[in-house]
Amino acid sequence: MLKEIRYFIFLLVIAFFTYFTGKYYISDFNKKKSYRSILDIDKKIEIYSEELPVLENDTKDIIQYVEKSNDNKKKKFNFWKLLETNE
Image 1 (cartoon, rainbow, N blue to C red):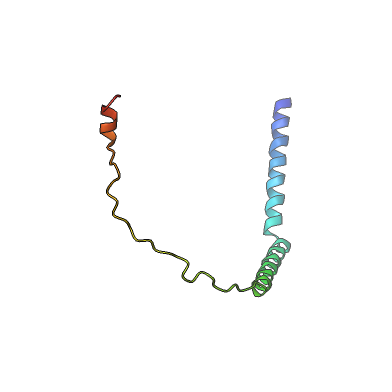
Image 2: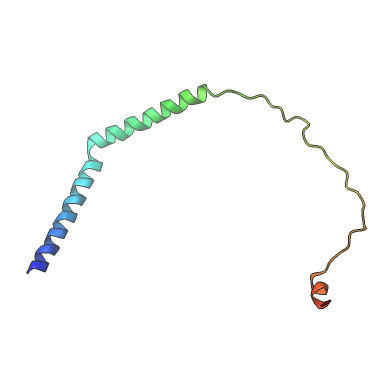
């Protein structure tokens, strides 16, 4: 009997929580509040974007190209040959 009453109270609390949460999020007050906050954010973004400084471009001719040298003195390694020699 006590267990059934406890389950009933749990279900009642969950039902009230779901009802009041849904009622708040569907209410006109919450819709107006969220719409106003979106408009405020848009206004803040516009104001911030107008105050951004424009930096001048200082990256002209910054890349230096180097000619590739023809050094064939590099030793070529093969993975399997390295495994075969066990010295």
